[in-house]
Amino acid sequence: MKCRQLMTPGPSTCTPQATVQAAALIMSEEDVGIVPVVDADTHRLLGVVTDRDLCLDVVAAGKHPELMRLFSILHEDPVTCHLDDDIEVCLTRMKEHQIRRIPIVNDCGVCVGIIAQKDVALQLPESEQVSSLLREVSKPAGRPAQTCE
Image 1 (tube, rainbow, N blue to C red):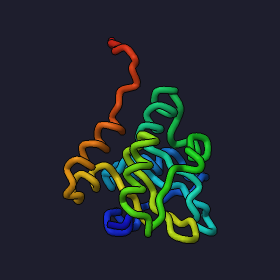
Image 2 (image 1 turned 30 degrees about the horizontal axis):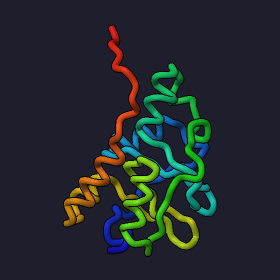
Image 3 (image 1 turned 90 degrees about the vertical axis):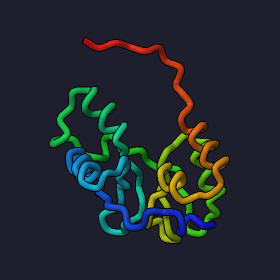
């Protein structure tokens, strides 16, 4: 199976100048946890912003999402796969980098899809592959629990 067969096509994107709030609205409206950030002219993938980034880099830091621009929290040069990569390549990269979502790019570097953990779980028949992926990307960080009051 190729990445093009498993990916969710046509993800909504933002440019680096968009506000963090704009990315959060996309995540909320489309029930996704990642927004590809693209060049305004070429639409080439520049990076990604995740729901975790919004929580840790904006909310926890007490910053204002309506004023912050995505370039300030952008993960540049994200791990990607190509449309015609075998799904095994995608699964290996997700495991190695402990990521739950991976952008799929075309020959021009344009993000044309996303493969998320849920795509793997729902569409791949090989239960051992799914179990292995879930184990690897879900490894704990090893930090002690905290209580907030």
